[in-house]
Length: 282
Ligand SMILES: NC(=O)c1ccc[n+]([C@@H]2O[C@H](COP(=O)([O-])OP(=O)(O)OC[C@H]3O[C@@H](n4cnc5c(N)ncnc54)[C@H](OP(=O)(O)O)[C@@H]3O)[C@@H](O)[C@H]2O)c1
Image 1 (tube, rainbow, N blue to C red):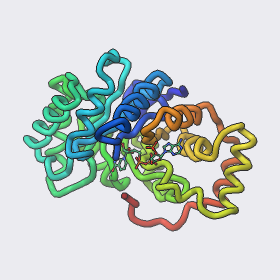
Image 2 (image 1 turned 180 degrees about the horizontal axis):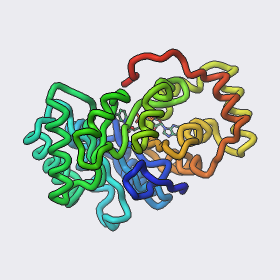
Image 3 (image 1 turned 90 degrees about the vertical axis):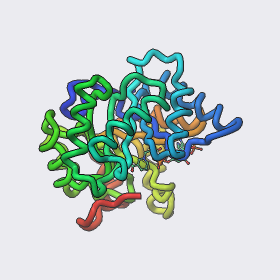
Image 4 (image 1 turned 45 degrees about the vertical axis):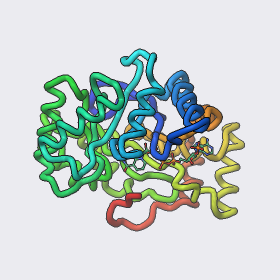
């Protein structure tokens, strides 16, 4: 697995981690999803993303079960506070809830899921308090416009969020206009969520043919090319969600692919950047 510096945190993380949204919550599919997460960890996808929102806390519990027995220091667990809970006291108590459900003593990364109505300064102050108390290692944001991300950083003692987790895939490249340049200047990593964009990148024969040609050249699959594109810059990370071992293995394999300038130009031609506009979210 390719590892690289995670923003200005001073640590390195795998370019490709694992998402958990919509993870199966019962039966054989749950067992397979938990096996898949453990297989992902074996393959170096140790950055695992979840949120108190997913399954109203249930996904954190199931992830906690999946990782039981794996030495904690081998994992990088990220979870998110819901904006409605993100007052100063609410954030402290939401973090306790996530820790309990995950059965962890600390979170590696704690994100504000999106900007809500609680003053951002309060949430960031709570994040610094959690860091002081040893309950969180790094604070970050999600779904933040460039200027919101910079404002969040101004309230954090570190001066910058560790990352901004944003919607980014071949058919939704809006973050390249402002979020990526601002993150680069600020020293924040950018984590691409929904990297397969609900499969839309596979629609259209010309686009598909381009991806298949690049995939053939790299002896890869089109999904691996989609992921390789999203981690092409040192700033960029991604967290595909896969509920089966085969999918996890395919996704992990994408980290070994380095697209060349010709590949990127072909993708740029068929998946254009699009107009500047408000940040897209799910
Ligand atoms: N911050 C936010 O607001 C936010 C929003 C959305 C998502 N996220 C995070 O980002 C993660 C990823 O985003 P996402 O779950 O929306 O979408 P995604 O990772 O782009 O796509 C997940 C879908 O792709 C399928 N898939 C994965 N690998 C595959 C493969 N190799 N071949 C074929 N199909 C494959 C999965 O199927 P199987 O499950 O059957 O393998 C699932 O249906 C989430 O799980 C969550 O942790 C964050």
